[in-house]
Length: 633
Image 1 (cartoon, rainbow, N blue to C red):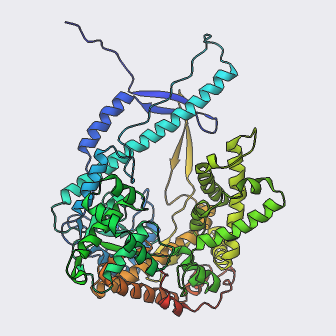
Image 2 (image 1 turned 120 degrees about the vertical axis):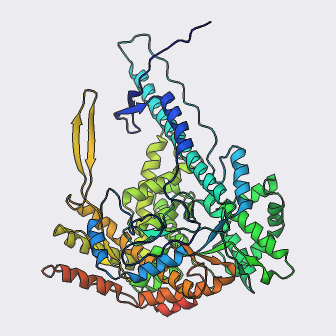
Image 3 (image 1 turned 180 degrees about the vertical axis):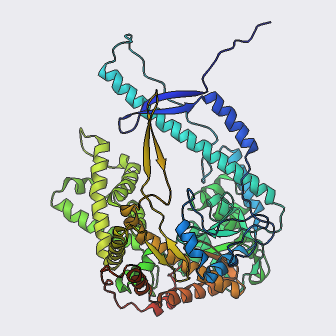
């Protein structure tokens, strides 16, 4: 017999590698073989703490209990056990409207879409890598550079090669770790979906984050997840399509395929023109022709689900009587800017984000792009080098993310990074010039374009910028008193921003120095974080109030309702009524003196401080929202 060779290996290893910034960084890594064993055991034994419920969740009540039947969950989620001040405020506040909204959403029953579940399984079995399904295999690691014959001396060339190898290896290891994480996450989602396949209905209990935004408590499988999750979910209780329901299904299909910048009528026409391929998707979703269609959609698996629903309805003798279970969506138009326009009664800004009637949806991203291109063209004609390089390569996609996040306080650095990522995607199409470092040119161009984009946003939405500045100035006054920024939402929920300065401790070990971070409510206020976060958090608390008001009214009228923040869901047959409700509730919300109440609360808390006057407002007639078809579309 050949005796096995035993070899001792350390469980943990100390590794030194170069970061992308060229700095030498030490880290403690687990032995790859040990990690593999742990991952296999973990994958077999891991069970999520919170699952969807097979019965209606407990209603939230004044004593702070609700959700699961056998154990309590927190009404407001918090990190690192922070939020004591907010919890204390909630205990004495009247938040019955918050409870009504959470209870309304928790009562919506769901079921698994078995046919889409099978399509997801088929894509996984093919190896993934498409439609948001992670690849089934890892990338190979690069070969290390050849070492010098001399152990004592390393040439500059070898040192540079080693740095590049470390960076490349680190990128691939990070990508492989991400792939592994996504595969584990998908496996858990599919396991939960499989367990629920035979259930007639199940429910999601809800709670809040500190801003008042709602979230399903089960974290892995819910309608707020990825397209995979959403495609596999149906309303458990159906509703007849009625006279307009089939058109709403077709509009929904067009939206999912990215055809959402045209009128509703043209979206229906587009869907009718594609009914042939829709029929083929239903007959065989895994054929090459079918996959070319639905994989090209913005939301592939929801596209497949909608194809099934449309063809099921059209195959009926009377499509109006077809009982539909598919959730159909209406999304806000750059919703943060919609809320700022309503706060400031901004006529021009409101028209740009569809608060006023129009024949087709207004596209705020294209409006910003047009202004950016105008400035870019002028600069290029004047001989600006960067403008000349970028000419012809800036499109809606390049500026969209920056416009979208500007309302939530994106910084110049953040905007630069967003645009840099878009330019990297196009770098092979751009003539950067001869004998230049492409990375340096991408960096310079992204800085230049970020400035143009943010400036154009300010030009177009000056009213929103004034409100954001006013909120920031108020925050500075509050935090100067070493107090957190607090306010009460229109539904009565007390909000306390949790931002504190982390306390860092440095520990010296025999290997290297380590930094430990302490977090907690007793630490000093993080003044800059409070200021930058207050405007977006305040708007989030308002968009949540609008959503909860809509949920409450939909529940009163017997409509099924769900939401993903500013995306509101109901049956196709009840879409017209939900559209009426969400517009009425938006008008009701903004007829309240929201900014005046906020200013008064600051002055009452700090009577010795001089807060700035409210920003000037325009003359937007909020009643026009009622007749704006594309307010949510």
